[in-house]
Image 1: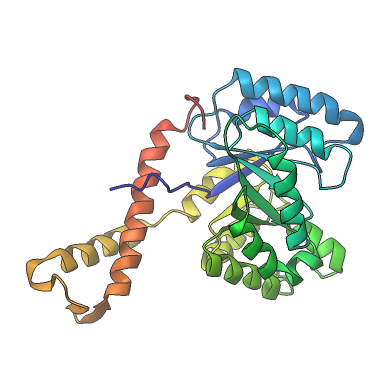
Image 2: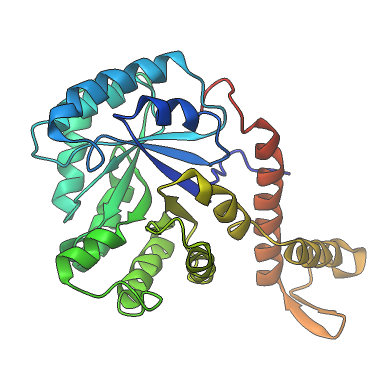
Length: 304
């Protein structure tokens, strides 16, 4: 059985809100989520135009099963309030808040949201893109899980982390790995999903494939993307393999057998398998089923 609460976030595509063609094309792409960007991808002179254009697109188009996320400008900036007003009236699934540095930012965001009438409650996604965010991440996530809107997802901003610290981002991100793993551990501790940062060189497919493998092994829940050509590989990388699905089914079937009902540990073909492995198998199968159900409905539909 599938869990209706599962939201796939294997492939999360950034789309500049100032690009009308990109907005329209996003409604046809097989990504799990779309982040319409009003921050870095939109120049100051174009922000009003981008906001109006995005409002029209969100009211006129259906985006199928894709989650719709709005990346607003940072707290304390002039465009932030207008961005948040747009989010409140367009029924987005989440607001991605950039430059989060402390739990006080989570509180300030909550106050700003409470002052508006929302057509539909939206979750909070938080960018982890500054040294301060890495340093204060535990406090940020703890506050976010207790806040309204509730923190639902962390998004790593590797480009900004590298820029602000001067740390070299190449060589398999070896110098960034301690911070990335710290962020993953914090997310897992609080039950928050976490998305890896973008791969910039979308022409380098081999490099991208290697980083996807790294992302999966580090237990990220998905990857943020900058180009449609990156979607299929991300969807495949963050989906269970056929071998994993088959093994999970074997474990589930073994524990469901009459002779093993209530058993804490069983012998499965000479290998000791515990109930914790059953829990992992059932989660994997639930995710697999969610992917199977989502794919046929990924086109234009009735809304995210």
